[in-house]
Amino acid sequence: MRRFAGRQLLVATHNMGKLEEIAALLQPYGIACVSAGEMGLPEPEETEATFVGNARIKAHAAAKATGLPALADDSGIEVDALGGAPGVYTANWAETPAGRDFVQAMTRTWEALEKAEAPYPRRARFRATMVLAWPDGHDEVFEGKVEGQVVWPMRGGQGHGYDPMFQPDGHDVTFAEMAPEEKNRISHRADAFGKLVAAFEDQTA
Image (cartoon, rainbow, N blue to C red; front, side, top):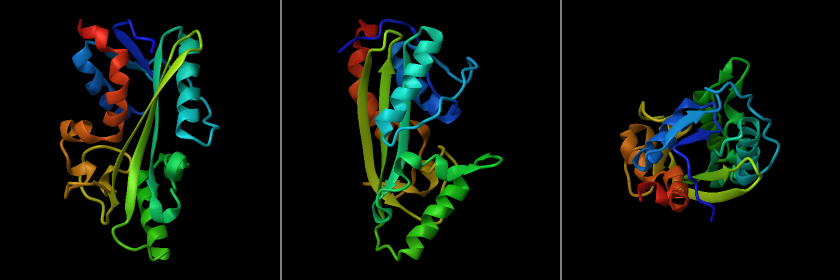
């Protein structure tokens, strides 16, 4: 595995919630994060049908545009009773003419489950794929997930995206009801990050 040798990492995202989660995970390694949005980079079109495909698009576009190593995350929620939807299209379900509205997306998801008369518990999982890409075209891939169920009504004011309706296994609260540090300890992104850690281990040497 190629190791990351810098002190600042470009995170290929325009989502501040996602940037904050990744920055918190990297803080113990003495690595500062800057986002693609802060650097004024455009958002590339995500044309792949898989999390790893879209993460690669974002990571390589940012690395090529800046000459810096870049970390991209593509993530989403898969609901079993909906055949794994929205999955890789999780953000698309939130799109509106005025921007992303995840309350709308969560409502759409629950209404689809009600229409399907899906049995309880309504099993789901968050998946995250992280791609660390270098300007020379090399990349490393790290995948994580967290199992749970979707619940209604939405609960909690923390987090972002689908967090208010996702209750992870072993907990009676949603991600949005958890303190950020608790969510970051068990999340799909933390699972992927746990596999990414080897690329940063020498930072603490």
